[in-house]
Length: 144
Image (cartoon, rainbow, N blue to C red; front, side, top):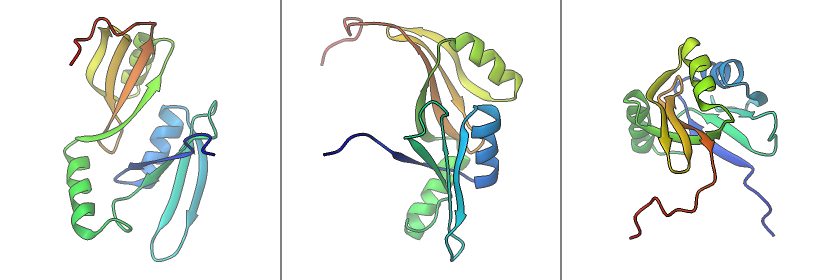
């Protein structure tokens, strides 16, 4: 029986810089950092409150084929790669702290039916959503 999601992959341009960003700026904890031969390095981080969900910080390359690795690299360079969402209990406060640390926010905190949402970029160009959730029933969204 499946019990939970334990690993997600996030493509990054530089594993050391990404690890510093996630650990030093966002407060994640370092997980694994090992060289596995042929230039392949396995680097993970996780949120301290959720060690069961690791984020692999992966450079575009094998097992991706060359064309896909190049496409991912171009998307990172253009700041167009999706990342993941982070929950906060103070979107405005975390936004201010992160901006003071130099984090880029293409979208500042904005009211949404489901809470307050801001969109930031990590230092590889991935988009991360920061959400301060509130209860909602979906009635503010049009039905298809």
